[in-house]
Length: 395
Image (tube, rainbow, N blue to C red; front, side):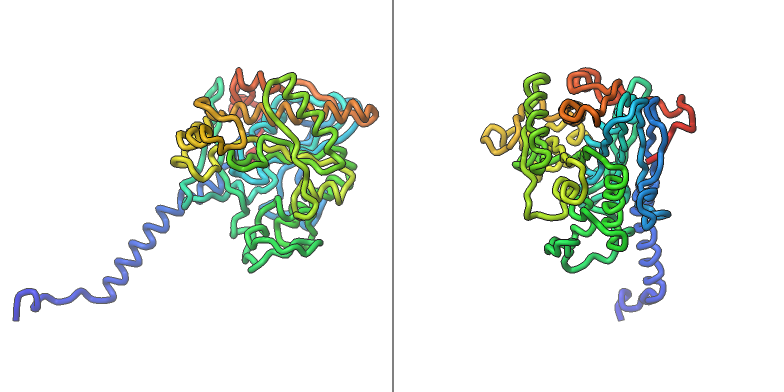
């Protein structure tokens, strides 16, 4: 018998224990960062214009006590007027809308009318991520006093809140057949229902806010790929199209950035800009700003790409006229995207107010496109460490 044959074999039970320990260690090592990401709170300082912070479930009891129940920052003017809802983080991998609404929350003062701001309408998606696609867990925005750290979310709610997925998502009430993933996508579950899947409960609560408060204007802030034709635009149904057209013409003429209007498709259900208009009196507008990070033919999905929008592959495609937005060596910086959202929304409110004087919505303290491009996004954020603790919220 050779020496090798004479060695005793490892006991099978010991091998299993070692493998189990290794598997547990790898699970913990991989899971801890995801756990921390899910439970990280993004600081927001309620500015002088915020009169109260409530929960969306105040308009729909079925949402009370649930993880997905978002904050609503209410900004009431001294003079009564019209009312607007502003929502971001429908898709939490499209950060410009969140950053724009934070600027409003921390700086704006409403003089006439009321704003209801929901900075993160899909809480679950904002605490979810896509490590398989190389998504960063966080990104930092520089300020005069340091850095503000934000979670990088994803498009769909987590299975931790929305499970199991159906084989096919049947939209309510039209019964249109959609992808199984759309049950977790809050831009496919409008108008929702109080006893439906969890994202339908969220959109139903938002619809109840709009119906009960008699909302005039509703905004949903998004970002879209540079290779996607519906980008750099305002999506609006017929009832909102005239104001959207006037607003995009004005910002292009007065502020120098391109935007256009895309019609809301009547036969594709579940979209905010479709269902809000059909199931309430509100005039809906979905704002799309370009986000190169989401394009497929790019380099690694880094924080740098997310914030500066510079990519050599997209630059090459721009030279071949394959993109739907202007693109050069400057990329598409986050300040341009946030500024574009801000100026477009402010112009829509101005156009609405011109045509509806008794329901006008006026505010001050909100920077426009040129200000944000010049100063940077972080210029308008306040240090939570120096703020009144009662004014600090963690999203």
